[in-house]
Image 1 (cartoon, one colour):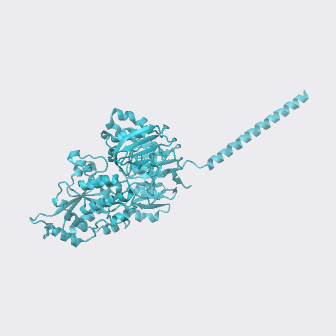
Image 2: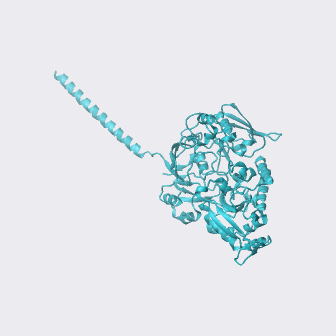
Image 3: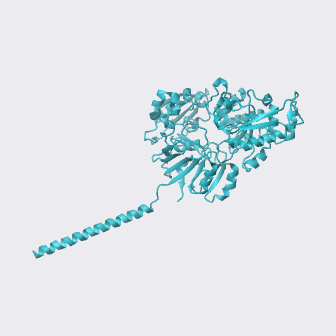
Length: 569
């Protein structure tokens, strides 16, 4: 009994010891886990600000749209900051060298695309050739409105020989065929999500919630939350074909107040901005005060300040006279405008092409220049039969005052608009001006029939070429509705139409640049538009963001490589 008692006591003590050790070990393990958790970095986050509300509508020209589209659904290929195409969902970019782009002797051509086998939509469904064929079907259907582009008319048969391959024949050469299924042309749409909506009513497709709260893309980031008028929240897509993004979450916040955005950037609450919003003078004033970030000034958005003359029934009718338009351009000191309004950051616009365009210098050299010469301007108007009256302004032979009107497209063009009016009044041309009221901003019949001149921050470079076509003029015949960028001046020229068409059909680079030069010569010899200077778009980028491209060329978006962006800790 005594021995049993000893054994029992020993066993009891051993049990207490084991329990104590186990509890201690568990507590220690728990403490170590807590320490490790506190040391482990949390999810990374970045805040991007857009000055305008955005959605996922294809081909939207709202500043900031390109950046959003590249983040959520860059498509098969993306344009990098050196203006080079890189494959994303595609295995390769079609080229003449790799045989995926073929020119036929009869003037037609063909391109072949192969989708990476690991490519999936954000809902996990595989990206298939049927999705791409469906995208082209929708784009060709004119009843769908916003999905149509001029390039679709060059496309012939679209074949899908296997689930990952699309073969397109083209009725004639088209230089941007290698950008098909990118954000620029045939932006990929998931057939399994949109086909039912399309089949029921093609005209309602653009109104579907897919383009806002229910968007499904294929890019580095997928939609997490969409709050209209406030923000779009994105989260990293683990199955992105180029690898999971380094930043876990990105908020795209909408804030139309540049002063507020600037203050938030200086306070560390904004990591980057996209689109047009900052005034140049305010950025120049503040850039040296932002120790934790930088401002870049880029021409990749292809925006410029320009005056568009009215070519259909203008008031006064002399506006359609080339000599009169030339005189008005000679009267504007565009370099002074650049120095005073753009802090000298932009060159005077002497060509339709962007100054960061690789072929800019060669094209610019042969284009007619209009150097500031107010005496010459006044003499040219005098040669048209006008004389200064006692009031200091020009009058025709019947004593009628020579007066023109400038309609500013928005408040952002107020300063250059008033400057132009002042220059014209100095040579005796009476000038009135006004800003288009917000409530009439989309009243296209009213906007299209401005009486004299309209001042815009319009689109130029290759992106703006389609808007030079006669078919893009808003007229009563097309109910003032056009797909894509409109031809605001309503200048219609079969010669220019043919040149633009030839440009997009000319595949060899030297011949294509020659056509581009002829387009620019035509614009400046006829002054179908009257360019002032380029718009150096200011972007804010915090130092804590790494791998964000700057000094981008041509069509490159700020977010072309957003999967490589990182947050410095």
